[in-house]
Image 1 (cartoon, rainbow, N blue to C red):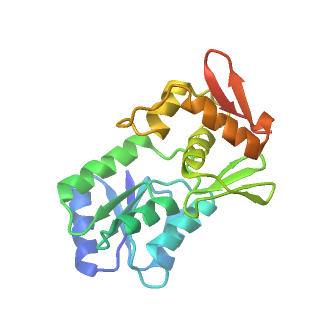
Image 2 (cartoon, helix red, strand yellow; image 1 turned 180 degrees about the horizontal axis):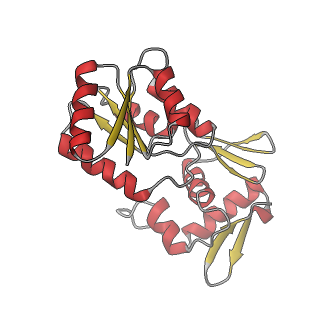
Image 3 (cartoon, rainbow, N blue to C red; image 1 turned 45 degrees about the vertical axis):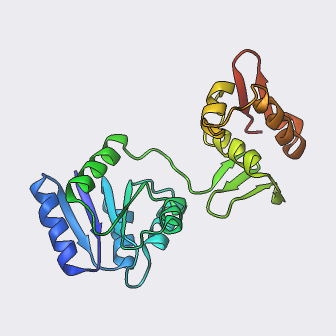
Length: 219
């Protein structure tokens, strides 16, 4: 397995390289954002460990550029920034995991192995289904270029369906993933919010598959 470590702290980068090599990985190191981006683009790596605060180009911009180019190499972000919004920003930019400094090396290796087991399936940072787009970082939905204003629940329901385009998603699955399990939710809540979305997206946007659930149409 080939790994790329993008880290400007020389001691940290060296320690990571030596430790990961001892685990059996082949490891390259980049000390700034532009070099890291160039290597990630063309190096054929199985995963990237990416710091956020980098010279030349931040880790946020590096991972955003990779995802914009449809490069889905798994990215584990490292940062001394431990705020919840910092972590959310990293994940919304396209990172697969986020670990704050100081961190446990054992945990880092375990998370890295988990990423490698999952491989690099397509994980676009902006979701697109037909003329419909959803940008999780900006929480913005458009259809044919026109912005659509959604409530928080409508947005969550649409995002879940857009991450499974063409798939039939059951009411039970939607209740489990879109509604809070700790709150008693009426059984018809899914039907009600599907109705709300249809009014805003068009009746044909969401297909009811009788006895199975709902499917978001791509056209």
